[in-house]
Image 1 (cartoon, helix red, strand yellow):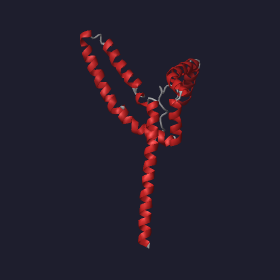
Image 2 (cartoon, one colour):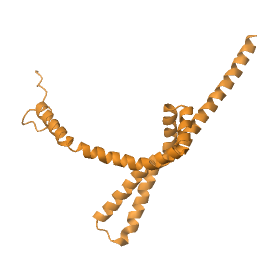
Image 3 (cartoon, one colour):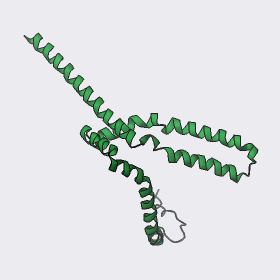
Image 4 (cartoon, helix red, strand yellow):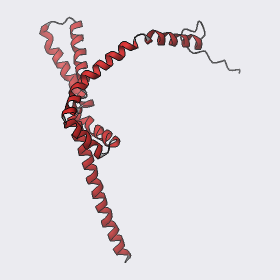
Length: 178
């Protein structure tokens, strides 16, 4: 009888683990579907663009002739390859899937997929980069009056913490008696 219970328990455990694996796979598939709709594979594009611009700017600063443009393109390609190794979608996707499955239930992810497939979801997705940029600019503009105040406070704190003549260093520790 004990042997029969052990066999039944093993079968039940095997079935349960199969259901957990299926549920996990389904949850991950929902995350992948959402990430695809959200164009998460393009998250690194600004970094690639920034690297390309840095190389182009350096090329211009060196006043290299157009005949050396192939050198620029070679280095830009090398930079892209280095970025691909670090942040290519194949590197980011597993972590992104885990991030979303850790923070959203499968049902929530399915709701997000449905939303992003809806006309409103598509509009949100199309408008969000522009809205984010405008929000950033608006915040930067409103921040301008606070910058001198914060800078002044930082300087005041530094003066209060660092004795005159110490030139930005922390006060020296008292000498130890022998």
